[in-house]
Amino acid sequence: MLSRTADHLYWLARCTERAENMARLLDASYQMSMVPQPLAVQNETWRAILALNSQEEAFAQAYDAVNAENVLRFTVVDAANPSSIYSCLRAARENAHAVRGTLTAEVWETVNATWIELRQQDVDQILARGVSEFFDWVKLRSALTRGVTFGTMLRDDAVHFVRLGGLLERGDNTARILDMQYHILRSGDEGASDFYRWGALLRSLSAFQVYRKVYRDAITPARVAELLILRKDLPRSLHSCADGIARMLPLIANSASAETQRKAGLLHAKLHFARIDDVLAGGLHEFLTDFMDCIYEIGAGINHDFLLPA
Image 1: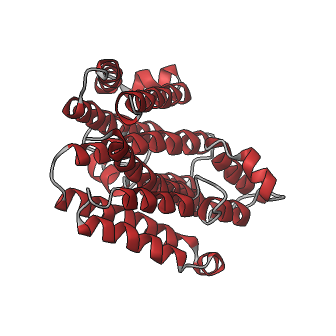
Image 2 (image 1 turned 90 degrees about the vertical axis):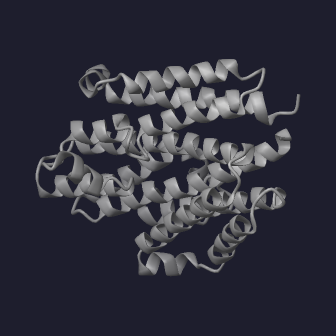
């Protein structure tokens, strides 16, 4: 496969997944902001979203104050912000258009329809009726794109690059969401509001019902961390993403990719044999930061090995 084609497919998946994960992160923060708390605490949560995505400087150039409405505008519909949901879905559509001949008609029509529907939505209307409805729409469109991709395309290198891009983005964003929300929630008070907050975090990663099925008990920080990090059978867990990456890379391997495969294998082994007590004892933030660094290195390796012209 041409590196240019692989690049477009890879970033089609990453941009679509990034839009979904931004929606998940914002939805979790929005749901938590519904719990009675001082305004300063709410604004600090929105500030943490900007810091998590290294967007403080860009935000400060466009908005005067950090609050829910400004952060939502910046991260949802601001065309000047390359990480906004608007920009991600636009980039996904552009990448799909560039390789339209490689995609099935169903995939192209789904991606294109998502972009057309997004352009018809007004930010004031989104804010007026509640952003959760919009975030659900983003998650649904992402799931639909994923479904038609794996349901209609040949299981060849094109699908492998799509899958690889989605897994890398998902793993990175799950770690980011958990790192931010776990730190905020772990320092909170126990009680009904605390239960609601943990539930919002789990729902943001489609893991609330799974938690109830696996643990059948009260929500505790250690079990939340264990579920989202170490459970291989949870689609959005770090272990599941690392396992998928390690399995995808050999399917597209070339003479230059051995080191990238080695790094992916090491990351998978670390998660496969880890125990949550050891993770928490060593510091969850440190563990998640190390995971994100590894994902970045693997992504850089994929870019070098497959996506850049020789």
